[in-house]
Picture 1: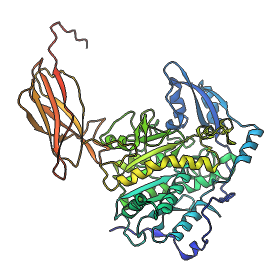
Picture 2 (picture 1 turned 135 degrees about the vertical axis):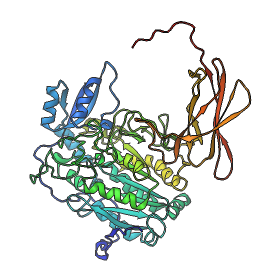
Picture 3 (picture 1 turned 45 degrees about the vertical axis):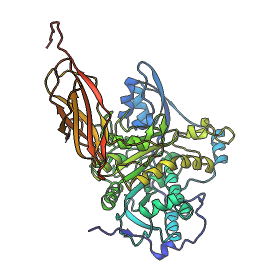
Length: 566
């Protein structure tokens, strides 16, 4: 039996009126305690050997950009308090604080259009969520999925046909969430605009109508309302990342407070101190225990209650499209066949300008939302890292924005045209994920890619020398009667049943919701033989399917003596 979430759509709460849903400038947030030491922006010229020092200082690896080249130096942007900067300098890291001139500050103020606004207060996102639901009662409903550490409701909007009468989770469901990290202002604009895009096109676009009628779309515009409001307090708090837990209990929010909500989920929580930090002053502080934060527990409970098939967790600012394993470096998994079809490739990305890659291709994270969603709650989740201030500011040479005026990568220009452009290039990927929910193992790719029934782990030489040779394939779990087929030197075809591989101590056995790795053994083949291998099965509809073939040669024993050193 599903527990009924607490509805906050009281009649009085909706007496906001049918005014335009356009952004309201100068919306005011609640007034948290002042920060005694602000997070400041520094530029560092670092070697590959110095990168671990930055990670130990609490920097998020995804935000550091490309890994430094061997033997060279790379310029990176880091976010530190004065004490943290002093410590890194003592360790030999050259840091230069990045500040803006009074003229640059004035240019930014003159160009700003008041698009960004806080969560709470008049004209804020919370008010808009409620007003949107009131304007579309047949398609939407709003729930509070929990409360923040400061007691604010974390609102989620459900968008589907007959939203208020249909049971939650009764249709294939997709979660669009944003703003786990407070300073990433572009991300709530992404989910806010996507919410309106579905509603605005429902009556005129048959594709949108089909998605909305057949799928539950859930929107969490801010997964960190307290922290997000705090970033609107003033320049000193603009780059705050975490929630507002008063870790040291002194009644003041300072550099040693707050928990990184994207390191607080139970899956692989605290696996190591590179992917998250045990230090409260770190930007990636994971909290005192798994799911210690109410914001984390709220999202986890929502995922468990609804049973989402897919999710997109919007972040900034690194221009990446992340998927798969985050806790261990460069670890491919079976569902990556599906992930790549949806996210695309570096040369054919589902979001132009973003590089699709494994979450852990360069740096690790642990206790993060995506790994927990997949391996605990059974949903595939992607993380787009949206564009930097520099990229957006330089995209139009004729507008008022210039990358030299960027305070940091997170300060996306407060400009309607640039924000809408960033949103628009994300639409195809967002829609493709929603369409895939109806048939979750067959992606509706925005870039025309397929997820093959079989992806063999091909090789050209076997060193079994007469012993059994194990072969492996990633296959769609829904394919039935999966078999290994092989023949030696063009002879008759032999077969073996394929069995799921349960994984070893380090690899395997996870991130396998819709695809899995299967193995079997070729029991024939002498040195010098050529063995042709392929895999077969049958779809649910009874259609026969087969993998590409590959051929390997069984290596001959070396004629020379072999020296073994132990």
